[in-house]
Image 1 (cartoon, rainbow over the protein chains, first blue to last red):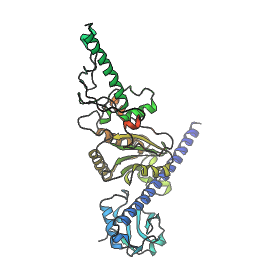
Image 2: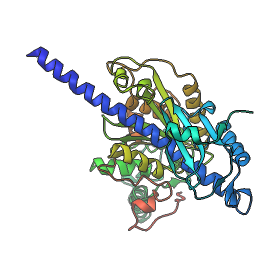
Image 3: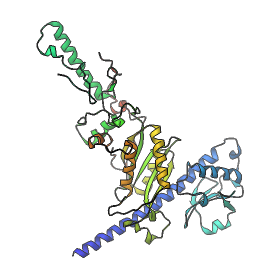
Image 4: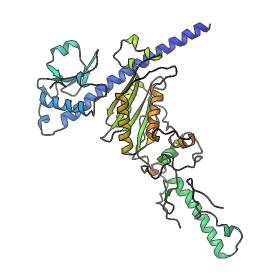
Length: 138
Length: 279
């Protein structure tokens, strides 16, 4: 009886912790998505009438903004490292679903920010098709 | 009879004059005694409805409205703790920001959910600090995500948000119910120091995570909160009264707002008295 109770208690703990782990992962994912969206709001609107106010986002402006964010983070969560951020090497039209940048906080997860300011998961195939470079590259 | 302020010193202005009490009859003494009684009554009223200052003594007469509200919500006798200095960490000479509600302990989803520590960012918005088991971090396969039950590395990470409201909304999406477990006061310097300390802790993060006697997000967030509010010092339990949790039950997303949480907000139906100059 005692062993059964112990086994049930351990099973309950296991389930609770598994759910907890899942939700913590989701919290980190949401932090990345929210950070990307806030980065977009700042990047797309930081220079009204200037280079970012046109219909195209230029890769050099984007790279500069990403590097500045990585050096002095204001939007990305702390687990986003410089080596895990990729930026587009081509112009991206404002309002499109073309990727501006991709954040890879851990091995099996990639989150992209597109020209419309939406953050979404990015598949391997989409990443391979997307012309990009590492944000930290000189 | 002589009353005393919490930090010593008499308040003879409000006390019944000893000589009068001893029976010096006469119209003048009776008038004087009546005036003192009125003064005492006025003092009580002013102390109740606002964060009043006794300019003569240079001291607070009433308690932190934040604390009063918290007491009112959970206790019908809100004035049991008479120390009016808890909101400035018992240090009224160095902390002068009575409404700078700058740090929060946010719990989402109850004990099986997640607790985080949120501090105002001097650069704007807020920064939330999370304490997770390393293998809850998403980079482990599902069967490894439970390893934190017994032993695991820690994973401390920070997150920026435009405001506390935005942060709470996101936490609510994931965990459902929300509670603001603690509200701490501090200056911008306190915020900067806390951020510096926690950023360093993120860089140095090493240790263990264990449910069985180890740390978890709830306790860690409260530890950070106490570091913020008390500078890491141990303090007597009685002095912690002022920073007891402000509980907002249910799924109320409205956090305490530093601009609306004023004495006028607490007692909007009563007229406010300015600081009294007592003689």
